[in-house]
Image (cartoon, rainbow, N blue to C red; front, side):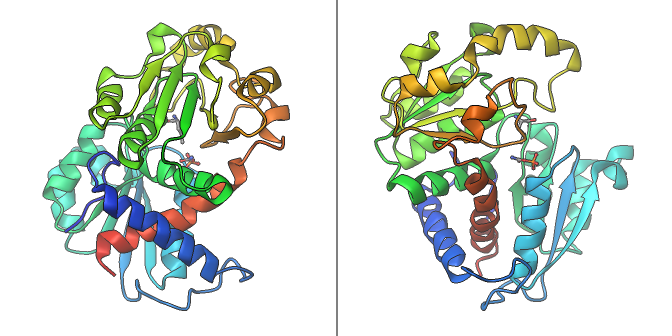
Length: 308
Ligand code: CP
Ligand code: NVA
């Protein structure tokens, strides 16, 4: 049984195969209505539970649509709908869900919940974002970069902002797909050292550069994310905004990166905070392709997990 819990714990050859498969499935659907089924129906007769302990637009809709395109069915559950939110253990929830459904995707506050679910489920579990990582997003992002510019191997990705869960999965991807990563942001919001250590353990560069203009020189991708994540206390909002304002991705920063650099953001974006509209709607931005590719990349992840 194969869980998709994180990029650094998934075999690099399997990750590479999933990206190729996603591109092939995307190509096969070109010019079709969004709701049309795929020619292949590998999830026919399968039921997928999608559990959300916190809000989602892209993850929720892309998983739901992807499963249906492949002939499967979904049920979308909020954390509060389940007994999970009312005292039943995660382990018991995992045992019970495994008797009803063929796969569970979960977005959770605590990474420990994901691991406990996976440890006790007898069906595959997919990570749809935790406080620490967001692997499905970065599978879509690698796919998106490669559609525009070819292989991501040996490229330089620069993250400007909070060293958060989305950064962590970018760092894991750097190690597994073989590219370098630079973090630029305020020291109190540095990423966890483990994530950078993973990149280095795979022979790639992982740097922290405090000056954003210096950091983005030679970047192939400039990427950012919200300054306040869903798991962050709202009380930290003002302090974070003050700390992160120098790391806004704006036209001046993109100019320092150079004309060939792509701009990426997992969305939802807070326009004029972490990124200006001029960049988000500008010629270097591929944010809508990233959002679309969640659908295709996750279809490949689902098929890998289920072996279909
Ligand atoms: N990027 C992303 O995961 O978006 P949602 O929170 O809308 O799912
Ligand atoms: N870092 C953000 C990503 C949302 C997709 C969060 O965790 O809220």
